[in-house]
Image 1: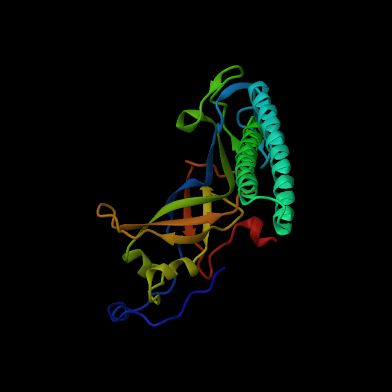
Image 2 (image 1 turned 45 degrees about the horizontal axis):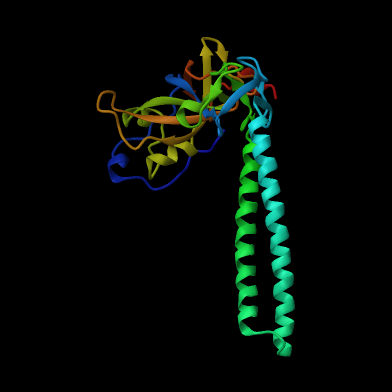
Length: 283
């Protein structure tokens, strides 16, 4: 459990006696959110030839998800490679010609015009080779993009395209969504400032220090606590006019994927004498 921070407090807060941590901890209502949720998008336009996962499957980072028809991209790659090879050969000839003319120029056996022409030819050939190699690299990248891999580990949605369909790029090219479930984030409301006084955290110079003083027990249902404690991370900048509360966020480990985005849970601060989840107390 984190230790409370002991610092100077605003004079207005010193006017109130600091109460002891209450015997019965208040329960906050929280909602589970995904820390990482990634839309898998097509980076090339083409026909989907294979889908390598089932909806709801847990996929590992780097796993193959989709395959696109490679025929057109393979042809582009061969053509780009041929153009690049030709450009490199022309560049090599231009370099040799320039080197010969440079030696002859130093000996006074070649005209300045001929030397200048060889120098220009070398520059042109170099630029053409650079452009051809850039096109080859682009073709290689497109070829790699015919296979779509998972950028993160998590649970994948159903595919938003079917085998044989034509996929586009951009917003229309979303193929599936992956949600990472370990860890997860919980958003909950903290009544402010009355509840903070009840929690005995009025010895904070700034409200942001709250995140360093409290751990939270996540209650899935009465009598059922999540085995890992949630650690507050940040507080919202604004107080809600309707609820007079701050929104707080906490991160909690979720290796068994028990907590799912959208799920409602209860949170209670872990005070000095509060009960930890049984699975943690036995560790």
